[in-house]
Image (cartoon, rainbow, N blue to C red; front, side):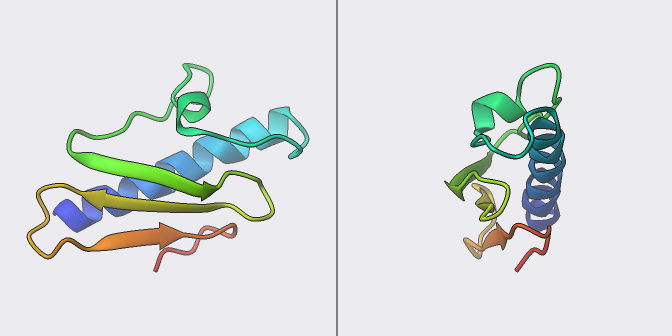
Length: 84
């Protein structure tokens, strides 16, 4: 369940950033603060950490993990929405 929560947060922030890029012609960097704005609607789950290594539309890369996951697994989402 913890891993699903982390993956769900990555999926949701990706959708929020896609909406942001659509509004800004993909030319600006998306951040967690931008994605969390009411107009984009991302809400980070408790105990989930999401960080960006690249917030651009073309190079989007975000890493997510859940603090309670005993395996300490982190997941990465790329610019086409694939999670590994």
